[in-house]
Amino acid sequence: WKRLRLLSGHPPGDIDLVVDGATATEFCKACRQDPRLSAVASSPPIVVQARGGRSLDTVKLRFPGHHVDVTSLVDARRVASAAPATSGATGSNSTGANGVRREDADHLDVTINSLFYDLEAEEV
Image (cartoon, rainbow, N blue to C red; front, side, top):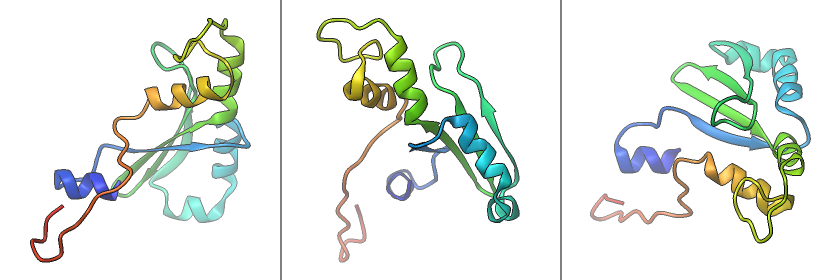
């Protein structure tokens, strides 16, 4: 997120996160029960059910100045295991860990591993 802000001069529309160990619905319930989160959130967390081109449920968290969308690897593995396996597939129809990672990657806008900041020129 900070890298995008540096490159574009303004923050992206939302921050996308992935959690493991809970479904999106379970994660949303835990967020609703956390008083620390309630104290800083602009509104209660909600789950947006998968539909249309979206194959994973998404938890929407709203904070002043920030929107956070959270999906679950538990849900992604469930979707991947329910999809028919295709030989050599790397897309969302493949099963197993590669299919889950591909499903996650298909929902990302951009991934940047590193940036270099020139202190003297004050530029990226």
